[in-house]
Image (cartoon, rainbow, N blue to C red):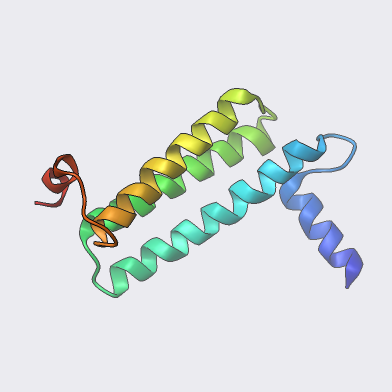
Length: 114
C-alpha cells in the first residue's frame, strides 16, 4: 500500500531525482486543485448557482491545468509560476466569494452579475 502511494505521488509530482522538493509540492497542489475545481464547477452547475461562479471555476481549472502542464510536463518552474498561481487563485476565489453573497461586493463586481 505504501509503495502504491509513493508511485502515485511520483507519477503526479515527479521523481525525487528530477524535481526539487518545492517543485514537487507545487505539482501536487496544482494537480489536486485542478481536479477540485473541475468537481466544484460541475457541482456549482448541477445545484444551479450563478453562471459566473461556473465560469470562474472553469477559469480556475484552466489556470491550474496550464500551470501543472507547464511545471510537470514542460519542467518550467520559476517565480512566474508561483505568482501566476497566486494571482489566479485570488481572482477566482475572491470573485466566487462575492458572487455567492458571502459579503457585500464592491459595485464593480455587480456589473459582472447582471
